[in-house]
Image 1 (tube, rainbow, N blue to C red):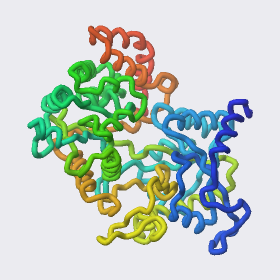
Image 2: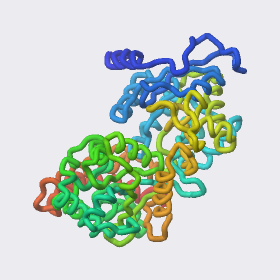
Image 3: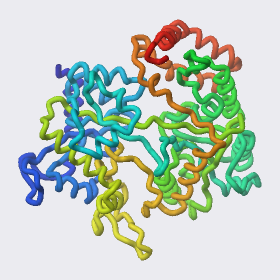
Image 4: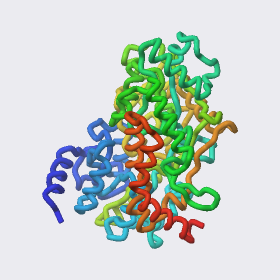
Amino acid sequence: MKKALALILALVVVMGCFAGCGGNEGASTSNSEYGEKFTYTINVQSAEKEPTASFKQLCEKFNVEFEFVPVTSGDWQEKVRIWMATGDMPDILWANVQNFNFSEYRNWAAEGLLKPIGDLSAYPRVNAGQEALNSTPYFMIDGERYAYLSPNIQQEGVDKYLNTYTFMYRRDWVEELGMVNEDNVYTWDEFIEIGKAINSKLGKIALVGSAGTYPHFSGMMQTSPYWEQYIKVDGEYKWGMDLPETLEAIKVSKSVYDDGVLWKDMVIATGSEGNQKFKAGEAGIVFDGFTPGAIKSYAEAMEEAGIENVYDKIAIMSVKAPNGKFWGQESMDYWSITCFNPDMSDEKMDRILQMYDYILSAQEDEEVSNLKRYGVEGEDFDYDEAGVPQPKYDNTNNFLWGSFAFNDRAFNYEDLRVPEEARKMGLEVQDRLLSDETQLREYDYPLYFFSAPNKDKYGLFYEDGRTKIKQIIMNSTNVEGDWEAWKATVRDKVQLVLDELNSSEELK
C-alpha cells in the first residue's frame, strides 16, 4: 500500500520532524510517576518553532515526547488525505473535518483506519467537555467514538458559540476625512461612503480580508446569510444560492468592487495578503476574527511596520447590514478533530488522554491555568514593574498547552499578556454579537451532518458557486443572466440533493 508518493511524503515529513521534548524512546525521566516513555508523532502547524518551557515541563510530567509532523494551512487537508489513503497517519492525527468532507471521516472509521477512543469516564474533564458539544453524537459511528472534538471559541459566561468575525478600521483616517461616528457604529451606506473616501481622497486601499473570507464580507453574508447553505423555508429545504436575496447579495458585492471600496486584487488573492495590507498601513478596513489575542497580534504587526500608538488609531467598526441589523453568526461548537492511529496501544492512548484531562484542569486549577497561560517564570516570561507577565521571546509555540487541537478555547479577558485596550475591544465585539440589534445566523446541526449518497457526492456546490460569484463581480455586465446560467448547469444535481433532504425522516 506504500505508493511512491507516500514514500516521498514520508521522507519529507520525517526530515521535517523533531523531538519536541528531547530524550530517547526508551528513557524515563527520574521525576515522573510513569515508567515507560512514549513518543507520539503528531501533525502541527509551526512545527519549526521552539517549544516553551511549560510544554517541556508537561512532557516531563507525563514522561512523553513528540515528533512534530509539519503542516501548513495550505497543505493540511491534502496531507491528511494522503496519510489516510496510504496508511501512513501519525499516532495523533489533527484533521479538519466539516460537513463538506464528513463522509471521509465516516469512511475512515468504517474501514478501521481510526482507533476507537472508548469510554471517557476515567478522564472526567475530557468527558464533560465532549458531552457538552451538540456535535458529539454525530461523530459516534455505530456507537463508537473515533474523534476528540476541539471545542470552538466560546466567550466566558456565554452559552452560545459565536463567530467573532467583524471589521476593524483606521479610525484616525476616518477622523481625518471628517466621517467618524463616535460610537464606531455605521450603516451600510456610511460604510460604503467611507470606503470610497479612503480610496479616492486618501489614495489608500479601503477594504481587505483573507482570501478564505471573500466574498462573504463584501455584502454576501450581510445580505444573504445562508447563501452557501441548504436552508429550510416554510418546512421545505431550499438551495441557498436560489434565494432571491442571494442574487441581491451578489449585486451588492459587485457594487463594492466596482465603486473602488474593495482592494481590486482581493478577488484573486489566495491567502492573507489582504490582512497584511492593513497591518502594513496600506488599507483602512479589515475583516477578520477579532478576539483579544488577534487584536493584540494586529497591533504588534502594525508597530513592527512603524505605526506608533496603534491603539489610538484603530477601533472595531460595527457595520449594520443593508437591512439595518448588525450581522453575526453562531459558530459550530467544534472546529477540528483529533483521531488516533489504530495501531496505538491502549496504554499509549491512556497516557495522552490523561494529559488532555490535566490540560483541561486549567479551568479549575489556578496553578495549571497560570502555567498554561503564562508558562514558566524566568524561562517563558518575567514580570514587569506593574506585575504583568512579559514573554521572554517571540514566536513561542505551546503545542498541546494552547494548541488548536486540545485547548478549551474559552476567551480569557483577564489574560494579562493581552493589553487592556485589546481586551476592551474584544469585549466590544462580544457585546455587539449578543445585542438585541444583531441578527445571528444559526446552524442546523442535523442538516450539517446529514449523510446521503447525493449530498455526500455533490454537497453544496460551494466552491463552484463562490468561484462563479467572483467571476461575476470582476467581469459581468449581466449579473442576473450570468448567475442564472451557471445555476442551470448544476440544477439537476442540486435537485437530487434537495430530494434527499426533503424526503428524509431524519430531517423532519
